[in-house]
Image (cartoon, rainbow, N blue to C red; front, side, top):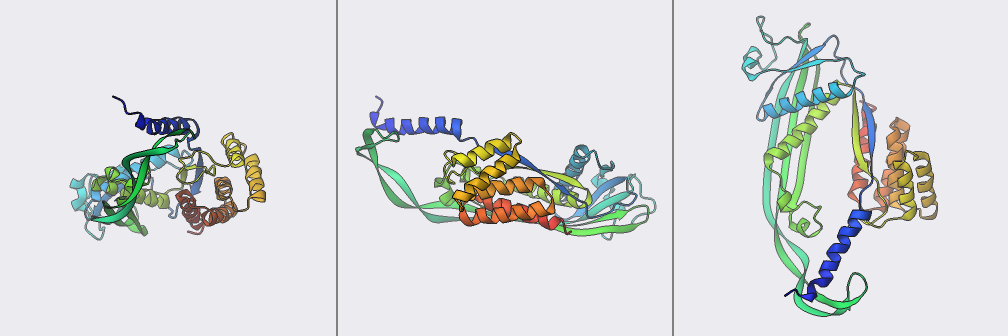
Length: 350
């Protein structure tokens, strides 16, 4: 027989589904930043990817090949450069110093890119004490989520040892570009990426969106994601690229509300921006700050507006807005945006 004591929980689940489905949709927009190349490829019209000494070299070559193809396909303004991923069987034609055999065959390219890769990854397993709320199985008279009189379960706080995994990974790639026509090394650089994420522990009880143990990816998947980032950075040094990011607006709801609620005026500005009326959205968010000078959502959304313009002066304004958002808010997207715009600003001086 169905236990009527479970009805408050049923009401809560239904309410969250309805509210999240109707009002909890996160509003997003696209930001495109132009990243200029750091190297002049001279008369190189075809580029071969050859060996990267070290473990996981196949991962970095595959990621690099795919990224170059993506850039060539997406940016029609660039002069087309053919890219070739050389078969491993041809590697004996190159020694560690990238000296070239006079009878080298199979590489019909003007230039080559090669290098070394070092990658480490490890999982640290441990437990931590977490405070959690649990039902006691006893009920008392109270009010449900709708404010109606009902029996509600008595909760208690307990301390529980919860397992977690701290995954740490690091990739360093040294690479060079050599002009096969002149036999000269025309560019040398190093890129690195780090990964540190905690799965489980207190994350198990924060929300279903957090890093629970069930969301722990395989080590190979983590390495593939890191190599993808490394490849993106290498390609950004070689080619002028358009980097498009999807960023989410902040409607003013607290960080645990999954997009529900929020500030009415802030949401009005978001609606204008989504309709292409960015200037109107900017005025609305500025108006919010006139009455609520510590509104982090208004500062953050203003940062998006200025970052979207993309030139150096507006990126500096965006940085100021994001700093204010971080100061008055407590959301991860605020800090992520600040790091992102700082990186975009530094690109202007490379």
